[in-house]
Amino acid sequence: MKEENFILISTIRSIKILGLVGGILGAVSLIVGIDLGWPLKEVLTTAIVVFLSVLLRIVAEGLSKRKRWAWYTGISVCVVGLVSIVFIPFSVGFFVGLISGLILFGLLFSRKKYIKLES
Image 1: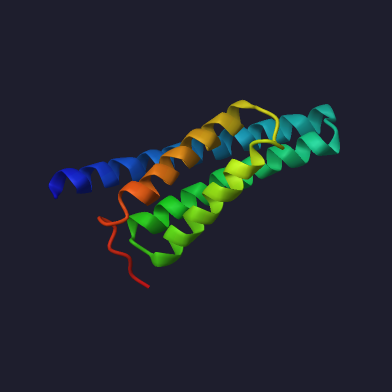
Image 2: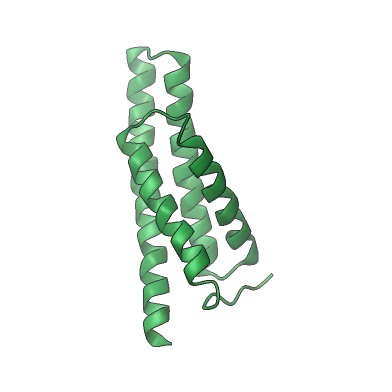
């Protein structure tokens, strides 16, 4: 049981860090894009990446406190993220968000029995 808790805590910590890094990279590229006069589509795409990174960090925080809303929100974010892969152009922030989303997806389904959810 200690090993499962260690894996769970380490994975949640990784998601928090990746969410923070994705948010910072996305925010910096958003500022640079606005400053350089990117088209509106590129600016909105970067804003979506920032939003998803922040949302992943919030979900990881909720999972670390074993909240039920975090599990359902995590599933929703993963489904929306996997569908939106087709529509979002690739960037560094996108890949960080994708990696953290895949880690979260694996965590939600493989470790659900170890996460005793509270309302």
